[in-house]
Length: 384
Image (cartoon, rainbow, N blue to C red):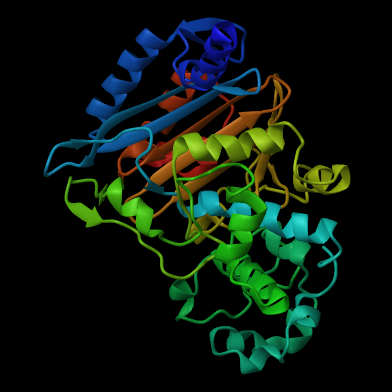
């Protein structure tokens, strides 16, 4: 009995110790001391004046190291820790894509069935989406696949287009990164199922993956350990506490929790083989200098070597270490990045509460897993 209790206790503690490994493996196979890594990241956080940062590193398809740097509340010098809830911003999008595909696997939705067929009323009768009725013929062409691959023709944000959600391109023709498109997908899911997205997310993702520090909307338990966010000059932005679901970016999470979601994708779990293959296959090549803004129509060959593309709800590129998937998360004062190399079993999740993160994101990713292929220039991080 004593031996059994000892074994049980050891198995209980193993995940805790596993997240504080003495070394982590880089993509090139070299091992790096986590003591040295801790010092390197701390130096980058300090030099860039990042208020706070959470890190989760995956090796061999396991989360082997997590750590936190800086503060969740700078004014009161409250340190950030691995359980502090952070604003995920657009890291929400891959989760929303995963939710849709799980529902599609059960026959509730189809990728190529027009969105309007899932709505209870004509699009003109929904106040938030009535602008799409200006070109009903084009709107009726939009499918969930187009929304997930950012080729629906919807703008990134309606606020940048006179607060209108009108189409800026014919559906299916161009890659325009679009929050509005993913939010329309979330609205469609809620409208057709009759269930709030936050409940569906809990049922399909957060509950099964034991992501206790994650919610599609703000949860009361988060109040005990959450992070404020800070602008470049160090002034407090505040905290994002979304009260309504937005498929494009309302989620709050921790790096450790989000690593659980990435591990699910890396292990090809949770979706049918066909759905996972669709999610992580190029739906459209990305040949623009940026996904939105003034450079969205400017073409470049800078990313030809890595074959930059978009799958269903997630970015894709190729490297000498195999195919990779990635996503960024950019809020008003929260900046995040996550990238995975499934063939190597290696990934990193970075969540920050600072507008200064993107200025050193490439250096931190390189220090963590040796990745020098992520498209940081395309993301605009190298301009900061």
